[in-house]
Amino acid sequence: MTSVLSVTEVTKTYPMTPPVHALRGVTFNIKQGELVAVVGPSGSGKSTLLHVMGTLDRPSTGDVEVAGYRVSDLTDAELSTLRAHHIGFVFQQFHLLNGYTALDNVADGMLYTGTSLEGRRSLARTALERVGLGHRFDHVATELSGGEKQRVAIARAVVGSPSLVLADEPTGNLDSKTGADIVRLVEELHEFGSTIVVITHDLAIAEQFPRIVRLRDGMIESDSKAA
Amino acid sequence: MDELQRTRMSVADVFRTATVGARTRPMRIVLSALGVAIGIAAMVGVLGLSESSKSDLLATLDRLGTNLLTVQAGTGIGLGSGELPETADDMVARIGPVETTAAISEVDASVYRTDFIPTGQTGGVTVQAVGLELLDVLAGEVADGRWLNEATAEYPTTVLGSVAAQRLGVSEVTGTQQVWLGEQWFTVVGVLETFELAPDLDRAAMVGTSAAETFLDNDGVPSRILVRVDPAFIDEVINVMPATVNPENPEEVEVDRPSDALEAREAADDTLTALFLGLGAVALLVGGVGIANVMVISVLERRSEIGLRRALGATRRQVATQFLGESLLLAALGGVSGVLLGVLVTTVYAQIRGWSALIPTLAIVGGVAAALIIGIIAGVYPATRAARLSPTEALRSS
Image 1 (cartoon, rainbow over the protein chains, first blue to last red):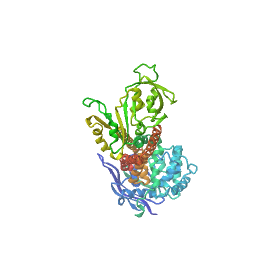
Image 2 (image 1 turned 180 degrees about the vertical axis):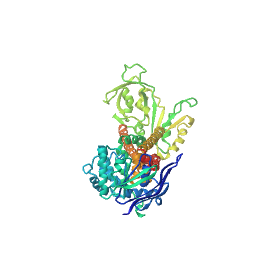
Image 3 (image 1 turned 120 degrees about the vertical axis):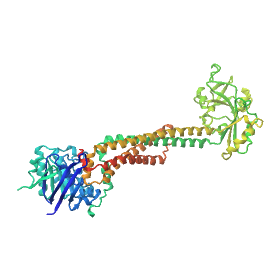
Image 4 (image 1 turned 180 degrees about the horizontal axis):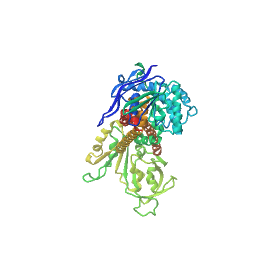
């Protein structure tokens, strides 16, 4: 299987006094079709790793490769285009546009890919149906429950069939039952072929996924596959 | 790396993103556009009103002509007797480019509604002996009855100016109504419309020259001569006029051009126009600052949206375009509604004043253009701030 994401000897240091070493030499690979949980306590470097994997931030040293592109070779604008085509994000706070319908929120997932509005909406319908919101196309974001909002956000992340989906604490703002539903949805999407990395502090959630990368103090503590 | 070529957003998509703020916070948009709208409306309204009033004045001048001169004796210390020579009227008529003349002689008599009115309560109405040509020379019009003619000018008849008629209680000319003029009854044969070029005659009871001599003992010395001149030679006529009228003491003769007064009034209006334009510009500036302010707040509030858009693949430039577009949209909204408001104000006011509403195209185009320029200027700083925001920082802030 081809590698979708490879992180090699990545460090990230924030220039403060004293300097903060958020990542201290992280190396791992994610292959196409994998479902991985990155788990660690707060301050372990999870968020920094997410930003580096998502090309929202560049590492201080080391290499990141996404979908065959070396991040260090790309300009800022090219990284934006890389994100538009190859990376989907799911956030803890959903980040939906309040005045817009579920359909248009999902369609916005492809806003910067050059796809026409009609094309985007048509793919958005399919994506919303896949996350079980086929009946909620025209509801504006404020009319949706928390779980529904996160489903819309997940649909937005997968609408353009990206090479990699990064989910940052996707259940963090939900009650445990709704959270469990979201985990099940993530698993379904994985079975459907998506490559997904879920970042969480919650070991109970991480343990439901086939591969767990444990992070502590900016280093990988363990990288284990479920038996 | 062809795949990572920058993807251009369609104009429709740019417009859609520029309206995100308007859709999520419509009231704020309306209020901040209002500032610009008021500024633009003030400027368009001022320009429209000044243009309409100017065109009204030009029409008036066109109707009345600018070739009317008045000749009178100067009054004051060292300016002689205050009288024109008896022959002045004939002398003026002999100047080549002079077309028509009409002499006015002030009559030493008072006019009252009836003989029961106490002496002195004239209501400011004067008595003037006038030539028959006066009406033509002044481009005046008869409101009711008729103007003096060869016959009525010989008899105790009078034509009243508009104000005089009002003060003497003459509302319509019956042919039998009389006024107590110089201790005898004069029949009112006509009432005139307002004279725009000789407002003092509105307060006069006018009698024929011969009637004034016969019944009122008038000496026939003209106090003022109204002259219509070939428009091509006005300055020349003005130059020779004093020496012609009074060869002995030309310095005692005053020559005026009444249309100058109307033009001077307009010039005074121009100063006011400039003042109001200045106020409009200040309002526009304040409106622009308001937009910049709202946009800066908007960028701060929408950090997470900016972070999301960067995560979805927006470049810095696309984020900047979105906020610049929003500011431009705000200003355009203000500009267009301001122009409409200005046009409305001008039309209504012109209607009330009886002018034809005239709004210079420059004011309309300039108004919208000024608003757009304000929008760009107001949007540059917030858009730059939005674009500079690092995606990680923007996402973290939520």
